[in-house]
Image (cartoon, rainbow, N blue to C red):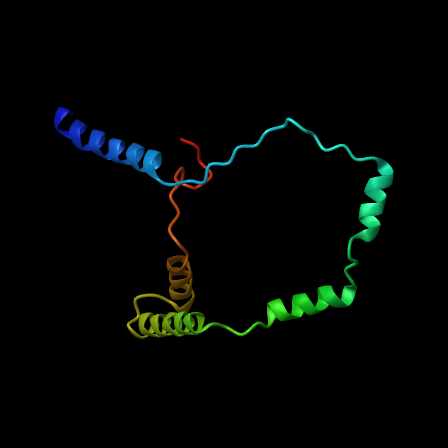
Length: 120
């Protein structure tokens, strides 16, 4: 057990050092002066806000759905198709299995507990 203790301590120390020394923006929020707003001010501000029409929402939705793909996205999709074809041709996996694997591999790796929102 003592032989395995040193590498574990080194790994734990490196993780703690990494989390302690990484750069994060420091934000200080104070509640010295709360904003007080009357109902009339609220209604006036709400009336002055720009109105969003249904046409604008529809245009944004259609443009988001049919936006042109970037060159990188096109190459990634082609690489996925090639990988699926090769897996099916070599009979190592079915088409559905190969698609599932390539989809899973295309997502970034996330480590639990190491996000930017975790405080040290």
